[in-house]
Length: 251
Image (cartoon, rainbow, N blue to C red; front, side):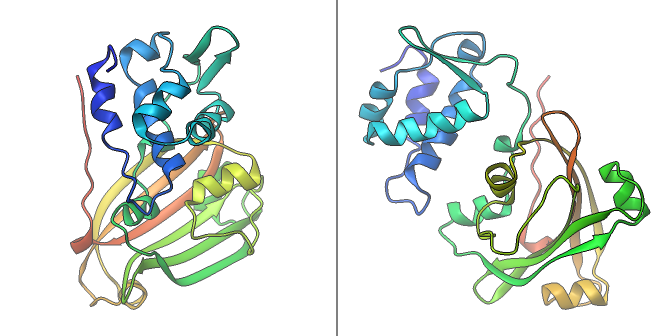
């Protein structure tokens, strides 16, 4: 079908019966395509009309997905020529991360927020250091316990740089970084993470409905924007029995 055989395999991953909207699936497919060496090095991307036909979706669905990549400056369109990868902007970014929301949606599970609290606080020494602000600066703190029906799975605590102005009426059932991008205008691009294994104290046990001493996967994450300045400092506590952390290394 295409010169690059990998694309043919990617096309088969679009699931018309999935709860994930088609334009999101197509956006993820395009993200995979632009990372292929040929296209990352300047080869013209497949035409929208061809992709739409081969995927069995409307051209507007493909255009909606490609518009997202264009808005992120990941691709460049030239009338009469075609679309290429913007080589200056292809870096490790959040599209390559697997979020809790995305994983649950892919499994067809409805996400439930058991605890939701958004408030302004004064940053302590650690938060100030992570976000690069003076101690005592007012920042938004978002605390959430999330899971599926009848089971809490993860406890998130997020602190946001003052430039990220969140509102309680945003739809927080959506992925957080999509909200930050679309509502606040900042694109989260780099994640610096530290993973450790701990045991639950009483506060964590109560949040996740587990026993004191049960194993927990703790993840500290610092998220940076395209200018490499901090957006969010996040601490996530995962029930160890429900999660594993996979890393692919290449030489």
